[in-house]
Image (tube, rainbow, N blue to C red):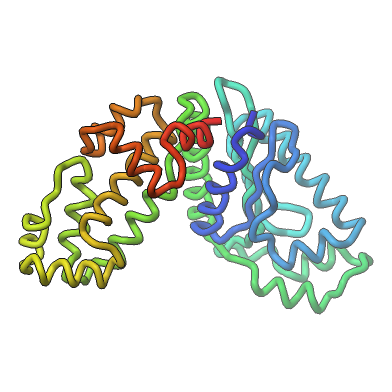
Amino acid sequence: MLHKYKKELIKIQEDIVNMTKMAVVIVDDEGNYLTEKSNYSEFCKIFRKNKELNSFCEKCDVKALSKAFLSLKPYIYRCHAGLVDMIIPIIYQGELIGAFLVGQILLEDEETFDLDNILVENIGKEFSIRKIAENYNFLKKVKYSELQSIASILHYTSVYITNCIKNKVWYNHKIENNIKQERVEYSHSQISSAITHINENVRDNLHLEEVSNLCNLSVSQFSRVFKRETGKTFKEYVLMKKIEKAKYFLEITNKSLSEISNEIGIDDSSYFTKVFKKYEKMCPKEYREIFQK
């Protein structure tokens, strides 16, 4: 089932890596990789390059997966190389459909397991002890309480994924990220009030005079500053925001074009189609067909 949503899962995995700085990969209900391995440590790569040690890695993964799949609960464990990993099952309607594999870290509040233990347990294996020692020092350290919190967050993420599958609606990262980025970029600008007002009132019929007053600028001053900082005229920017909002509705809802046109404050749906095509080089119907395949 999860194979259908690989694009969405890749985005979620990227966010998890950015948040945790841990190694992450997503597997299906049989343990097969759905995504590419992200942020895997050089320490682990050395082990996995060794044929014998890699077989231990795989056996360790399979054993841990089987435990998590049987309990259907997050499972934190230590791999044969001494690192701490965890598995977060993804459950849909009571059945396992996949899991997050996250980790390759050391516990900050644990002093009983160090590099010497790892080398002793793997003595006689063909690998560079120098490289192992060097890369061991770069491993991320996390408190056990923090690890438990991350496990909880990932559990909530798994619930989010199954709700998205059930409702056939996925959160639109692109639009929200753009809005957040703008709020950062313009937070200390003369036109920050205008940007905020436009973003929060896209549906309204916005007037240049009204918005320029929010910034305590004359219309001419506002127009000049606005064009300099956004690269667009006030009218162009407002239309762009309306089209972004329309794309959001086309991607995640089944609203008709007239309903979407009304949602973004364009009374004439034929004019909406014309403007949309100007910005996106395709009509709204074509755009929806692409994103709702």
